[in-house]
Amino acid sequence: MSESTLSPRKTAILQQAEQQADRRADWIERHRAYHDDDHRYMRFLVPEGLRVLDLGCGNGDLLAALKPSRGVGVDLSPRVIELAGQRHPGLEFVVGDVEDDAILAALGGPFDVIVLSDTIGFLDDCEEMLRRLHRLCTPETRVVIGYYSHLWEPGLKIAERLGLKQPQPELNWLSPGDIGALLSLADFEPVKREWRQLLPFHLLGLGRLVNRFIAPLPIIRQACLRNYVVARPRPPVPAKPPSVSVVVPCRNERGNIEDAVKRLPRFCDDIEIIYVEGHSQDGTWDECLRVRDAYPQYDIKCFQQDGKGKADAVWKGFDNARGDILMILDADLTVRPEDIPKFYRAIASGKGEFVNGTRMVYPMESDAMQFLNYLANWTFARIFSYLLNQRFTDTLCGTKVLSRAAYHQVVANRAYFGDFDPFGDFDLIFGAAKLNLKIVEIPVRYASRTYGSTQISRFVHGWMLIKMVRFAFFKLKAL
Image 1 (cartoon, rainbow, N blue to C red):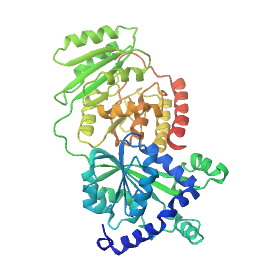
Image 2 (cartoon, rainbow, N blue to C red):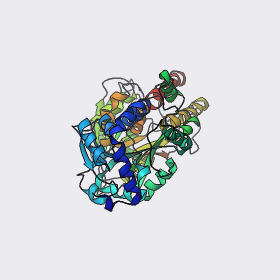
Image 3 (cartoon, rainbow, N blue to C red):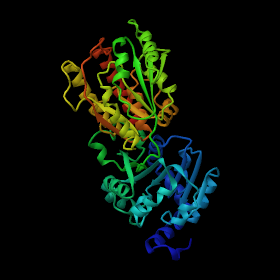
């Protein structure tokens, strides 16, 4: 690469980077609080052990912080790359213009994550560069873009003039909305947005406290210095219809077991039905076995759970499932089996990677949900929408769907949240959000029970939900 092949703007950027390369580590150390907070949140977005490409990698500190199984960094400046290689010898570094298609083609992808930390501000043609990334992506790849808010532009310019900040060239003026629009034009789909760092200084620990507990709050977060956008490639048309495993957790639901099979539409060619029974007192286990034997034309399996609670039953079913797609159908059948094909269409088409049912759109049958339960669902849905940066109208609907591959990713990353959820709903929701899956909701009709009684205690489980909000704030916001 020679300067003659670069635009005048890129040439100026390269010259400035070469001049500042040997002092870059000093600037980073002077602003350690800012960089530590940025790296902390990037580690939240990018699990360890993935194949990571960092475009505009600088000295490689961020790439190293992500602990990739394979880490490749690209930067325009030969001197910056030389120093990055000395600093992090276990990573791969390449000198080149990230807008040069030949450079991208030679990187040897695909990658699980492609990071552009501030790099979007230096590009000559953002849309075209983003479009070229597809050659390095799988359908599951995530593009993570970190940038700064231009609300801070006057203060940052003053800091440069006072020698308090490393000088930079004029950068592109892009809001998170602009970045999302560019990603969409380049056939990527934004799946997450977040704002961080209200005080990018240590201030004897005050900055850390503010950034953890105040900066993430609604409205206030719009004033933060850093913003992040995560996107996925627009999904391709699947080569063949995926298979399905429908897990039916059941405890004291004897009267609904056969109806679950009879009413479930044959919406794809390969459907497995898995009953996981929870040590019932009404003969549910015997009924599961009878139904299995009475319908040999269907692939029905029966298990008894090892522990207690719906989550334990669901994990038992998912762990024994063979389908490409995993579904939960509660045995009370208050969510109609007839609605399940909608979930299949959403995930099989790629429109969603985690599909959540919502009972809060259509009118409910009489006595399907008591008023206090409705009010609690409505309230908690809005709280969790904020915590997850994803609109939810009903986090407690039992019908949830994801691919088997995504479920195994949730399991692999479960240590981050721990064993915290007796329901299973939030384990899956939090896991999907942490993995930056595309989450969609599907409205369903909510019916009254025709057999048995609810196993939900509004006060006991309501208190659990309150504790869940606190738990989620610390795990998802106060990082």
